[in-house]
Amino acid sequence: MTIKLGFVVSEFNRDLTSQMEILGKEHAAFLGASVDKVLYVPGVFDMPLAVKKLVQDKGIDAVVTIGCVIQGSTKHDEIVIQHASRKIADLALEYGKPVTLG
Image (tube, rainbow, N blue to C red; front, side):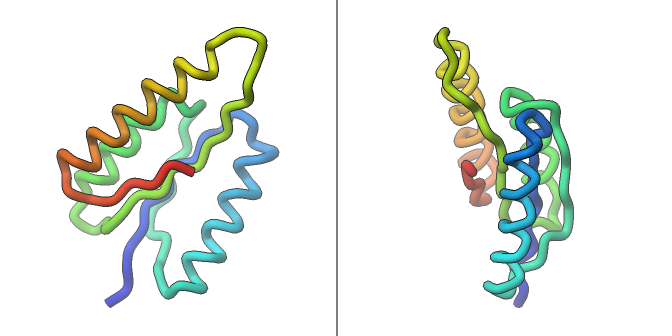
């Protein structure tokens, strides 16, 4: 049985996330998994909604999130990471599907 993955990819810092997406797809294929859906979001803070759509999809077994938050001079990066990761973890528990933080 092939594991069917959904990817949620942040377009912010796209120079980094595009490479992460390519390598993620290559590694999924190496492991015998298929990437069946890819949803793009503006940034990491926007990921939970897309994750929710994928975990609700009966054709998706697990979700991979790909984003890049760079530390700045304020605590904005910490706030974004804390809120997004907490909601993503809550969705994984609620729907009983694994969701990675990448």
